[in-house]
Amino acid sequence: MIYETEIATARESSTGALTEWDEKDVVARAKSRSETAFDELVKHYERRVFRLAQNITRNNEEADDVVQNAFVKAFQNLPGFRGDSRFYTWLVRITVNEALMKIRRRPRHKEVSIDDSKETDDSCVPLEIEDWGPNPEQRYSKQELQQILATTISELKPGYRTVFQLRDVEGLSTEETAQALALSSSAVKTRLQRSRMALRNSLDKYFRPRSARGNQRGGAEGYLP
Figure 1 (cartoon, rainbow, N blue to C red):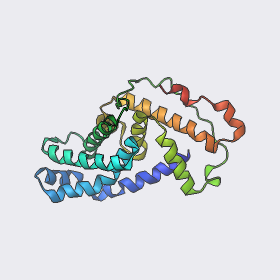
Figure 2: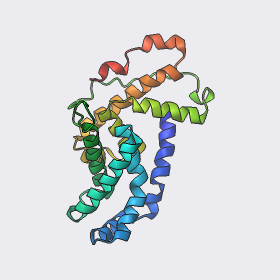
Figure 3: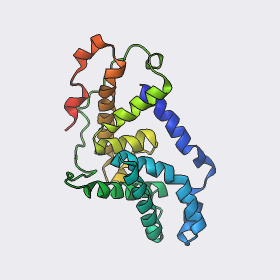
Figure 4: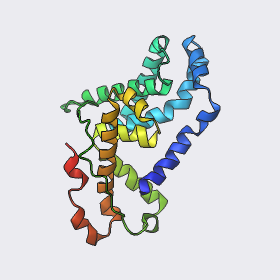
């Protein structure tokens, strides 16, 4: 899939520095109230946290507020961080909560929750995916492909979009994603599969030959609640 190529590039750029950066050491120093150490955590994760916040809120100004509030709360509650998970996993949970609260405060906005769907059985998700045919790279420039990908990801439902962001873009494991979002591992797997299918279905209008589209309507859409 074309989005797998773009996602792999994003993941490499967002996590490449981790091999030379000792998170546990920095967190330990930050827990002793070293502002310098906490600044290191902010600099290391702020772009990823902003991307996650923007992915949920779909608003840059609100995402900025979410990032600021998330780091303030992380600093305030850092002494209670036991290290049972990675600091980033803990930070993701704080960020998701802040982003959802930001959405709930919007006027006349329907209640939003990361737990709005309780599906755990992935047996109903179709696993066979037909080839698009012509290589998408031959039809669009890299910039156009990135824009198409960003647009289709934004169309996913919030609960699916967040799981997709953490697993396929940020590269968190199923267990880390489940812990960050307070979901079961099976629910994470189900949402990831459904988000991938919905994404693939949305991309049909760009990449599938016109003659083949008519037979594929309904695809993943029928599986989204």
